[in-house]
Length: 249
Image (cartoon, rainbow, N blue to C red; front, side, top):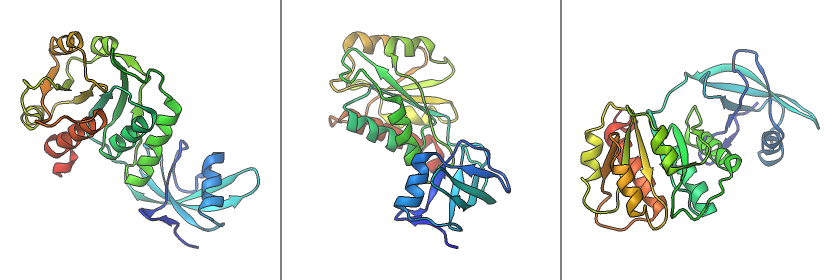
């Protein structure tokens, strides 16, 4: 009997099934292949499981056949934890960068990810299933005990119409006349928030005006250097976590 590990630490798997003492959890085919054929797991080996509801559990590989692999829950490792109430709305960029952004936003503790289609957005088709898989992988490797919700792609107009008025929308405005992001975030401490990042080329003037017209919008500047869209989004999340989120613990 041994604990399976990968270079980052204990091997962790996200599952949909409930977790409780003695619960048998059947892995999906992809997970079973990874565990048995990639990680070379054998009956009796142990991994950590989480489902976003029941905390993290130590589980033992109890059954391996050609048709299924089953894990048996042994004992809880850690209680369920909750990331800060931070949403991340981003204009999708080219495929590799979009997947990278989802991975890193998951690591940085965003609770909800929202692809937003703007007038200058180049990538208009979003592979929701692929983005969800990237979020799960990032949660498994980063130690999160939940996986961020990934919304269907939405237009900017629809986002602004449906955005909850009580939730601040930190608008990373490249126009250069907005307050510094650190000052903007400090004013939002304790308030549900979201971060909005535009596409390559930024928002067009009409979109920028529409965003700024919203009572919940909080414009913020990311400094004097021009940042790529993916860099800007992750920088904004990091600043928010450092000043208003769980990096302060």
